[in-house]
Image 1 (tube, rainbow, N blue to C red):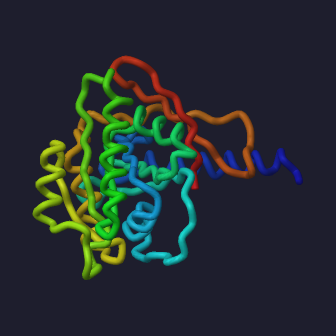
Image 2 (image 1 turned 60 degrees about the vertical axis):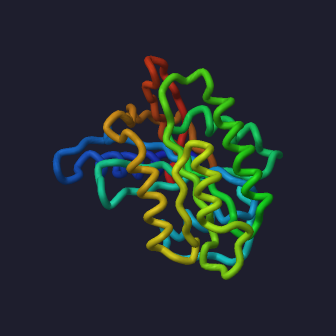
Length: 236
């Protein structure tokens, strides 16, 4: 393989990507606002299905364990806001990945299954982990609890009782089904609405000095409470 050619082609693609983002209508630049949203919850509650319904309006019934996947989303309410949606693993085997997301992301969608009471208890456990990880951060972080699979005829608890239990935790609650685009979109748009999108910042883009499996990476430098946070993000 001609790695020099791959690198050259990758740089051309990256420049086109950055150029297109800087030439949006209304005069925005490549430093558009960025909101980072992490989707948390136990395994098999439908986190990946919700994201795919939002972005592709379809659901794949075949289950495939998620380790960590990153998606791009643009809100119809605010086209100048780029939303990075991180799909996290529900397995404790990848707990370090989850904690990293808890530490660095701006807002959180906490998902459980209305068919599985144990996933509700796991949701509360993950919520406690989140507060433990973020205890040194003085700024509040938006969190929305979502009960998935509301299209099914059976549930382990009534909606009123779940709303009461989630309310006691201090959070807003919504229900949706990964098979319904409208409800799914409303849930994602709600957590965006709860976030202070006027205060988010997409930092400068830089080049990674190498090619990793032919993929392009962009370095984002974000200013969080006066401290620089650097991450490499693959462009899909």
